[in-house]
Length: 424
Image (tube, rainbow, N blue to C red; front, top):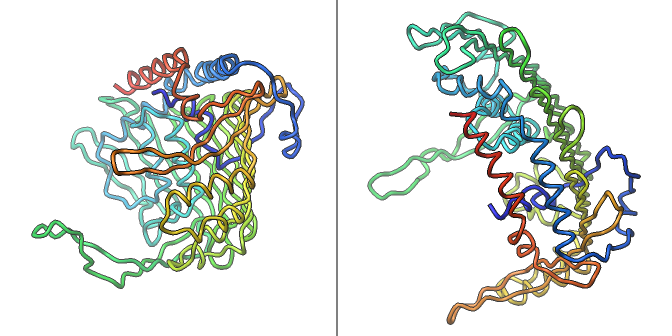
């Protein structure tokens, strides 16, 4: 649990962010020019902890949303054997996770990623209205040509089907063909061995997936997702938004084959609590390049701008991946040389900072250095990140996150207990 701070603030260095605030907005390039504050490491840590605790207070209440109780009830009713898309399946599992924000984010990631492709040949094969029969413990189905609906009790042990989870789907008129290998487990030798080396699966791609969960006729959850594709079926744009009571989360992805942008927002009553967006430049990315086993994906990524905002803390980063990659890709077998070159390349070709948005001051910047652990005759080499503060102090990124923050950790543990209690 000592990693709580890193989970909340540093775990998404692959994103950039902006957020509505009463403070003056800083342009992405200007943020790196902000002055450092001269406060001590402990003073800055106290500010970070305060922001984290305030975030936990804002999230407290998510566990009481009725949608989670209903989805947990649904998860225990033995859903009919339907090959739902990964998006739909992820939504039905929201009620079983105590990590609600992570579960919501995961469902949206399924919605906007390649994993959102329909896993049956046609989702329409699963269309129907399914009503839970409490007497038989099975689902009674009636036909439908345009939707999937589940009617079920909103609480465990409930007698009436007062909850309705409904999905509608629009076909994009495109299909995705995947060549695959099927494996079977061989008990005699304990290995997974290929049984069919020429498997071809054709998936239908969605233009939109809409979902709602209503309890007693009142909407408790809503999912809206839309998709567009390039000619080779690589996603061109995808947008997914989930609303659960006062909370909402949205993920948006755009890709023009040379530049890709990602945006994520988690909000309460329309006010962003966590907001992230990012952009990366690629060398003419295509579906064939991404799926070509011979291609080095590191060669495709050129430049990335990164940032994440949690309340009034911003973590910003710019990395020239092409230069970093070219500095280390020729080093194959020497771990010591590789990590030394990686640290040097990151220092020369990246800028990563932590900012106090309230004061418009940099808290710290990241400096990379090669490190070594010795275990007898074994030497382990790695690249470490140091936080460099305005007063000249240097603290390992891990050390900063792993020490102190006890009040934040206690608050976070209390919130987890509430989530677990609400799931009992």
